[in-house]
Length: 158
Image (cartoon, rainbow, N blue to C red; front, side, top):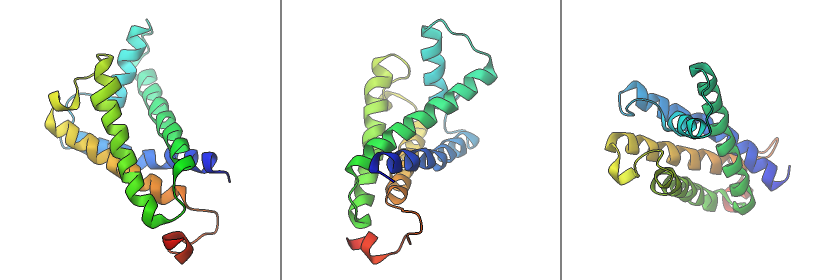
């Protein structure tokens, strides 16, 4: 499987544990009202004059979040080092970079949500944690090949 496709698949899969962290934060009352992917989707759709039902909006938020995770994974797949020992720190940094560019960059720039440093601290702690989980899971999965052992010495050290 080529690097872009492997990254895209890993990105889609890594979005699941990331979303689980966000949903867990919501269950504990740490996220405020809606999860950020739903807030972002809602604002973008309203600005486009689109008013879907609650169910349609939830479905679109899921599709958009999965699509974003898949695309980000494809990009990571291209630059991911072969060695796991190098890939994990890069994946973590990549997850943090996505968080920073999103929640300190384009999301507040478009007036969708406040910048992370002006938002609820509990929500931002969960969002940062979820992006750390995404980056770690992405790094672990992007290097996996069909039939490869995750502890193969060649994967760990090259």
